[in-house]
Image 1 (tube, rainbow, N blue to C red):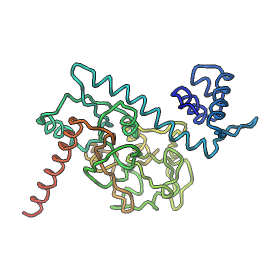
Image 2 (image 1 turned 135 degrees about the horizontal axis):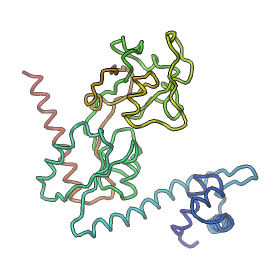
Image 3 (image 1 turned 90 degrees about the horizontal axis):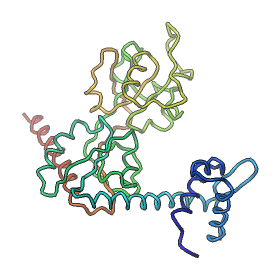
Image 4 (image 1 turned 60 degrees about the vertical axis):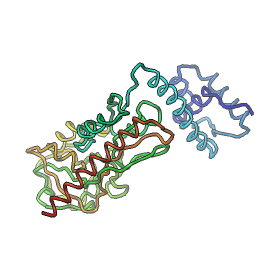
Length: 318
């Protein structure tokens, strides 16, 4: 069997993700017949069926699921190789740092200051992205190192935890639950996360979660006015929008303590949730990285956190 080609893997991934040859062809900018022929040829060369096709649907076989996982990894590696080579070939290579705004626990200025004192410290380029994009940016070569909040997909990454803090429920000041000093996830039973998962079934496990009130809830006080229902067509992730919806009574969200400290808002209250998974800030980088600049950044991040811990311990002992 000849080696697989990147073009074949891209074709297969498009079909496997769309589960529709027409949509996959449109995504690839080609017509459907040559795409169908390419997939059949790939199956012939591998001597295995990757897709089950009927007139109504396309589904992945067990072999197809394995190839999809490995093909994504391989394509990421190919893309990353090109991006990393281009960065290394610059007259002045950069250390590309991926992060989401507000997800540095206020540590980034001091980390950068400490990092710049290292000998192997090229200039830092910030790669800003949305929630959950940082790990993928490391895998596909858009970034060299990242600050990100657990849990996240750590495939192919080395990770150094930096800081763990509770997440708090963010409520409207007029919400009946705001009168309590502490909550449990059961108090939010029946409310849903942006992906439709009810609170309590799966977590919430992510650092930012908005929960709308589009479903009936148990033991909920009678509303004095019609409730605002958040639109569910698209998950809301912008903090400004989330805070506004919370204030209007439309959603609830959960934020790490380090984020809530930055946003003291008059119409919002923050309450601890005793059984809510905490948020851990970590620094991550590709497992195969052998970069002195990455090592210098990781040392700087660990040093800043260690210094804060020592000061906290010394203060508590007084």
